[in-house]
Image 1 (cartoon, rainbow, N blue to C red):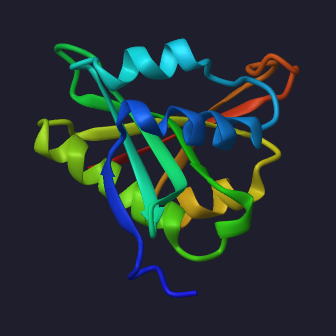
Image 2: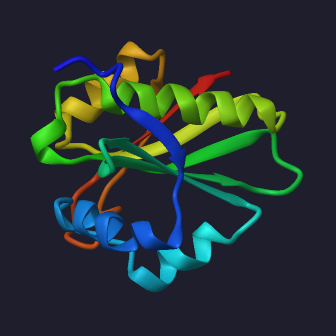
Amino acid sequence: MPHNDITLRPARGDDLPALLALEAQFPGDRMSQRQFRRHLHSASARVQVAQRGGLVLGASLLFFRAASDCARLYSLIVAASARGQGIGARLLSDAEHAARVRGRRWMRLEVRIDNHAAIALYQRAGYCVVDERPGYYDDGAAALRMQRAL
């Protein structure tokens, strides 16, 4: 299915059930409703959703630290039923644009070492592995730390 019918927009409070449902599809570490609610209202965080016809199919969470030239992509998730449609790439590109607008020169992220689809997405977008973090996730899975210049 083409991704031109996907709309990206800032997440709202009424998106919380959909955001939690997306999180439930991710193994290991998950954000709580309370954490999401805090990020929705934080000046140092940006939560975007991808939707089609009012249905939330993906989301990204981007963090901005004061006095840093780096933004951190904390989370990028696409519903299992919507994968392979370019939604992840759109959310990633949107997050990079938001980081540039806020004056950031770098984007960093961590990704599960066993999440081959996400690693491939990031590599296609120009991200390079800069570090490996054993036992990074609650379930003991390792993470790759990746970054790219914006």
